[in-house]
Image (cartoon, one colour):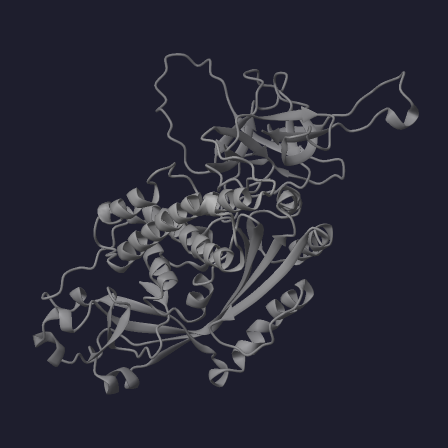
Length: 544
């Protein structure tokens, strides 16, 4: 099991996963480990970014399990640079965060399992020894840059989110194309937002970047900064731990409950809501005075917030990753008392309270339980602040010259559940992949994302527009497209103007010689002015 580094880690030393601490017991003889040491050179660097919509997004990007993330946020365990970032509180109601990471490995040190075992630990009670031993240590470094756009006014948040959505996918590699879009985004929102930058690293000495250009320069320089530490190998980055049950029958297998992960993501987001709300409330309380008629409302909020925060803190302190889902029942119950158990509940209530007390206009879009959905044709992400897509896949329709349904389907990329072929007739319909070709001649396989829209009652495409009607939110814009050569008439879809052309790590080939192609629709209007005739039709997908 690979986990973030623990300060002082030594090969062959015991480790207690329950407390996430090293134990003062050698499982393998240190001299045997030293004489059998194996060094595996590595040259791996990965630069990525992700738009962080919730705290669980950052743990996914950093590849840290939910139980470790929660304990690090509470301060129960130390995760080097990771923990410092996770303990940071960010108010996501008035800001958009992009987390940039650079992960660089230089080498891994390990030893063979046939190395000499020590015997003294086997006679001790297991609780005094630990649960695992350290089999390998990977060296290098990881850099984390938190780039936050904070709205200067609440009413600017929708404009900032729209600009972010128009320029960036939810996540991806930090290549030249993304760098250019970042610079464009920075210019577009410069008058409506304030930039806040913080940086954390497991190793390497650098100055805190002051702007986007400095951030991107640090990303490129970081691997070389790592090589200046530890005699060229950097610092310990990750450790591989192995269960002691593989060496002795006196130890039970350490099996984490996989069913916990979804619940832990929910707990992470709720805990961050409580932490952010608590800090914001204390700051507001210390810097504002109010009419005594509001005392009961303010006191009621403070009591409920503290009660929920204390309950969540207790649940995290007692968290055991091998046990069941009931561990957070009480904390979740207290969190949702006297109101809806909705995302960012206490941050929403605090903003409502402070604006009422201060008599300020309230610009926040109200929360609703309504849910809608739409297909994002041509992209693998959903527009902010929507969650991750329910699934991503490929567009499909009838092959060339083969009559069947004329609509276009978004087919999941993962292997579908298919009914075995047991039919008595050879008269069948077929479905194939779908290509696209844009006005600029860019072409490729048509991908899609099925997106869930929270707090929205409707989502639909509007042809011939580049923006949405008043009081509607833009999900994406693009070209009106249809299949020019499918076997039957094809429906129209709105294809994103900047489509993705493949699903990472997916090598399916869903097209062949009979694959239909999407082409842009253009207008022919003989009675129109010359500058209005023969133009491509734009489209937008809007929600409300």
